[in-house]
Image 1 (cartoon, rainbow, N blue to C red):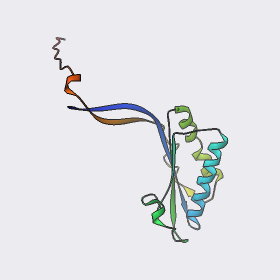
Image 2 (cartoon, rainbow, N blue to C red):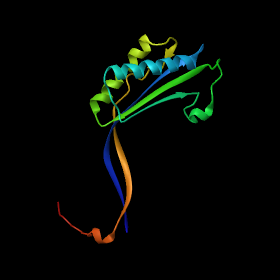
Image 3 (cartoon, one colour):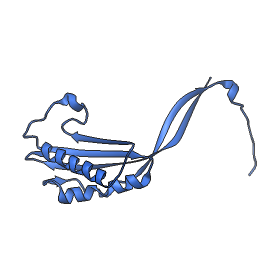
Image 4 (spheres, rainbow, N blue to C red):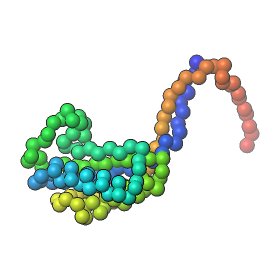
Length: 142
């Protein structure tokens, strides 16, 4: 068997972040996430995946982290989307700034501007039978 490494285009992604500060940092970040989710639904945007994390609360351990202290100083709201439709991902990126301007107060984190749409290059390691590959050498002069 030969080991092959296959890379292929697997759609597009974008990740937006906003930071909310005390008081009620976690509650504000949760409300902002809900507002964004509702806005995306109203726009009719559909994604292959959408992930919302709260940095400083549960981004690493998920529900196992438990509830944070009500006095937590700051929470980072991070929302990422993935889709085969680049236009949907591009539209998602345009919803972050309005959330900062019209959402819960004490937000920061737009210093780097609108999130960038990135192509996802997926990797798939596989094995193929040696009988399926014909080695060939070519020498060309230039």
